Amino acid sequence: MRARHVTPALLSGALLTFSIAGAQTLPGTLPPASQTPAAPPAQPVLRPPVGVAPATPTPTTPAPTTTLPQPAAPAPSAVTTHYRGTIQTLDGPFLTLKTADKKTVSIGLTTATRLAHNRTLQLTDLLPGWYVGAAVLKSPDGKTLRAQGIRVYPANARGTGEGAYPIDPANPARLLVNGSVTQVTPGGIGGTVMLAFHGSEPQGSATCDGKAAADGQGCTGAATIAYARGVPIIAIEAGTVDQLLPAATVSVIAAPDAGGTMVATAVTIERDPPAKPQKPE
Image (cartoon, rainbow, N blue to C red; front, side, top):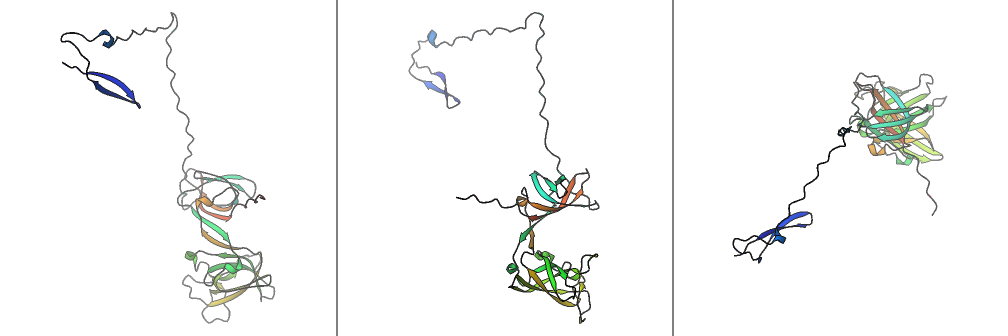
């Protein structure tokens, strides 16, 4: 009669069993002693020395948490503060700035924070139909408008603030002209750009200026603006978190949330970090 004995084997971390055939065993006899498993030796009972109290386990103290509270959107009625400076770090939802007056501030970001990015353009990049705003200085004789800066607005801002009107109560010669590009003429030390806009005067007026009404039904005006090379032309585009890099210059509008944390409602990346100089090969 054949009997099968199960022998454990360890293979690749798993305990397997298999049958061995061919071991002869007589009826009514025990297997050889070599096949009888030996009883494990008794383990000694360890006791502390006389007069020494048994040690008690030390409770484990959980590591302190370093998770920062997530900022919440500020209330619509909260008072806003404007910051301008360079980015030091972006740590999770918190942006650290070094402001123009050398102060360091931490401002929270939320999914409701609007991000915008300024892209530098050349005069020849301007295309007819683009809606732009030109800050200009009117000459004493009123015949020449010289550009001090031009901004290209996003398409969804078309018509916002349209017209030609003063922007500096201390200097009436400083105007803002918001309108659509009709012609760009490079030349000389810069060139000219022509804008068409609606103003506040009735249709058919001899002159057209002022801010257009919301329905844009006012007078139709035009302005020829002299542009000098080096005057900034900036396109305002949608921004991304990836553009919030150290050394970038930003403008931030923020307000406190319910816990007092300053939270940004809008961040404009005005200038990207300076390009690193290329090493000579």
